[in-house]
Image (cartoon, rainbow, N blue to C red; front, side):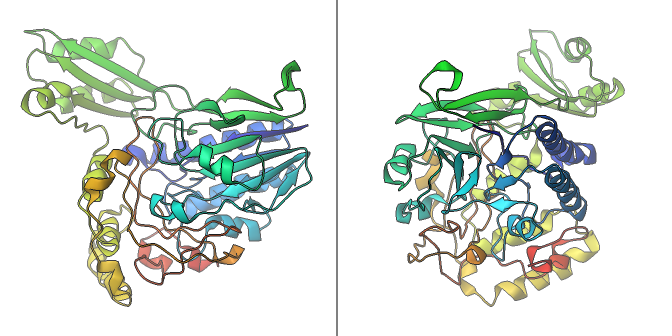
Length: 462
């Protein structure tokens, strides 16, 4: 029997709503998973990608993660993981650093045996690279096998990856696919194989209303008295309270009615998201947010749907303006260089006085590779894929060695409402059969110091 914690999408370092407290919440949630693993007598922790929210995590987030992994290692519990779209870099993966520190195992095409189960890994690969993938995995002699992968797989919402094809073309027969990227916990059986997402460990968007947690997966013959060798149970995490308030106004009602609805809830240390619908008088969102703050809320955001519904047909929320800006930028078809510069300009860790010099340095680096300035393809062809876009360049097939397997991040994530935005990326399958050997079209993190105060890059370590 093998019992593992299946988690993912921890997004450590995400300063949601520009709140340092929320940033700490994401690391605390990961710590809670590690605590449960140490106390719960499990054989391993399996992480399905997006350990970090950003490819350049702050030093405090990096050190906090290492501290948690050391506690897990001291308890004798291995940490197995794949690389997600958020954290992947061109010059080496953070997971490789943890592996060198003997704190983690990066899963790939070769089996990693834990108990009686062989675990394999598939890092995130952009849609444009998947037609070239050959799902060739090395054989094993364990009783069970599981594939850990990061992406939006069928039959779940917003899927862009054909699960049946993966299973049919794989050279190993899998009992389960343990997935990451979709923040909504779910499971389904596809071609006799269990396919499951544990969901995110903290709410990364307003759409993630249900409680957060992870999966406890057991591999054992005749599990639960049946013929199914896999048992999947849901475990909850105690995370930051979110209070969702819907204020439906009738004609003549306004701010006082919204206050009444907000007052019905305990707002102490909570993230409070207020939605105003219906008719009624104009309401100033800032006044309601201030009212919630005075009532003890950690963060308060108000979205007045009435204005959007009456003046346009667009559904725009100001609960997370950074997400709205990012989505608009990704839809503009900008080059990889332009996206990199935009990220630098909007980075919260770069002082205003240093932005000009930082941009100058980044442009000088990017000029070495003119292809980074080529516009992205027309995004209209990808609208059906929930805003996913790729750079359209195909690559030659080659065998990727562990130290060569690198991937460029994608800027969004698979939230419960979809809306994951893919950045142009150079992703590869670790120890697998596909690698992109292009030298151009990608952003190379040359100097961690240029990423801004407090941020570090892989080149500082690898």
